[in-house]
Image 1 (tube, rainbow, N blue to C red):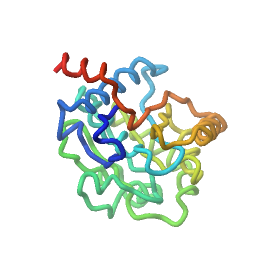
Image 2 (cartoon, one colour):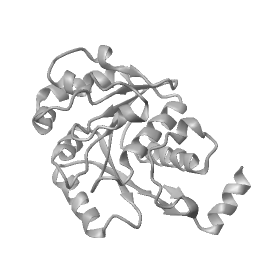
Image 3 (tube, rainbow, N blue to C red):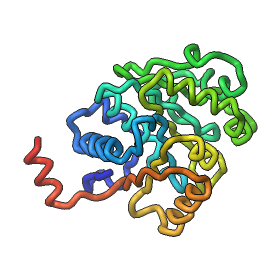
Length: 231
């Protein structure tokens, strides 16, 4: 993900895919969408996990905006907050977090009752719900397998935001269950060793690594030119 120099270090959670559709950064999200479409191993790929090596690398912002641009392209998208340690999706969309994924994993509710409208055409949300004491155990249960199958039957694409790979085991469990995984890297902040460890963790989990999103990458003058030429 490219940024202009003046915005370096300001990786706040912004839904530019919705609020600023003509912004340069939003065009980069569309480019990632195109790359993902070309890289998908098959038409049956419906669940994509977004994770990172450590916290605050931009995975939640990236997953939110990717869900928006996929919905913009006409897909029916469900964005899931599976970070049951530090959920953020309800903050991004200014919603209550009383019900969500944790309720469903505890078999307390139905998917159609827990899903919330985002206000964006084609995009629904499944928030985290109340934070459980045992997220890894819940995610390991067969209940999640059944839930993912139900999601696939209802939506064209399910984008899942998850905790950092090197902090807890949750994302390794999810990566094994999802069709593909995207690793978000904060350029200039994330250490190479951390990225390698995150990659190794995904390989150990038998995840299909779809690619890497380089977040907060500085634009060159040439990039500015092409932006102006295209605008």
